[in-house]
Length: 390
Image 1 (cartoon, one colour):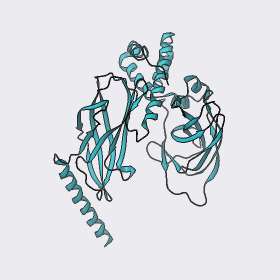
Image 2 (image 1 turned 90 degrees about the horizontal axis):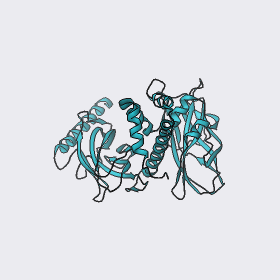
Image 3 (image 1 turned 45 degrees about the vertical axis):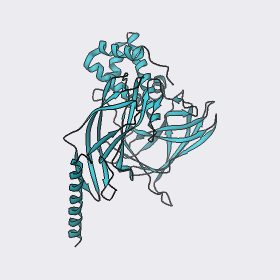
Image 4 (image 1 turned 30 degrees about the horizontal axis):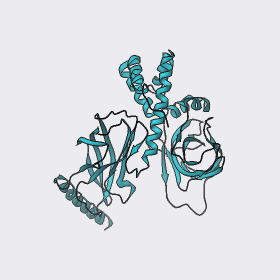
């Protein structure tokens, strides 16, 4: 009986899916739509769905495997440095929402640039059918070269885009200084390092918001720190409980050593396996109000779950953390300098993971395609009239 009920449920879901897809074929209910405000600094020139875009049933939801290409124009009067788009099939659950961030841009007024959307997003069959497309794309934030921004910023992407841009400027100036000093061999080492097999492997980091058990299980561990000398926030201690590939109740003590009020801190995580190999495992921002020279605690209410890129659980031997970036009350941001990263670790893989940014990866591709002269031309164009970093 249970098997028959399951088959009937699947059949009903398939019928509903067919109805949705038939509706999506109508002009009044499209698969996909892009909606930007009238005063938006970007406008869509064209969009297309890839042939790999599909839909299937998963439980009581329709799952859309979305592959789309947008061509977007900068209609503002300022260069755009980064962009985040919201992608929504419905806003009831996290699985119905997604985002696409494009950092390391330098799009002049009037120029166009491509944006790829490749993600899986779901929509419950019992969700009310709104007018228009099944999936809607909208602007969350656009960051300009003068570090001002536009957009509702519902995803708090302005901060992320700002960090990407500051990292991009840091890495451009670092590579440009090497070229100007005639240290071409070091430039090749810096860029080829990420193009060969010697590439740091990043772990998957998942934050689980399930209610905590009354009694925490797992092995208690101390959380070490990778310290950046110029960081305005220092890690002074930390503890957590580890069970399998999960870190429960992590608590990090930090001290604001600056004379400015800190508004938020983005803490990065490094996992060491049982063989002593270290992996960068992403970072998590947290709102922490710290007055000058004040000490405080960063307590994560959820559970951190670490896994290898292929999905298998990570065996946790030790945990380390580092201050990835700091936001002050005046909106200014601190990120580690190249000198900070050089002094923080002698592990070449960890150093590479900490130093690599989307901009450095882009410049490595420029070097691979155009050689040293093409890289020098690109860096000169980007750094010649670069605005002062924030």
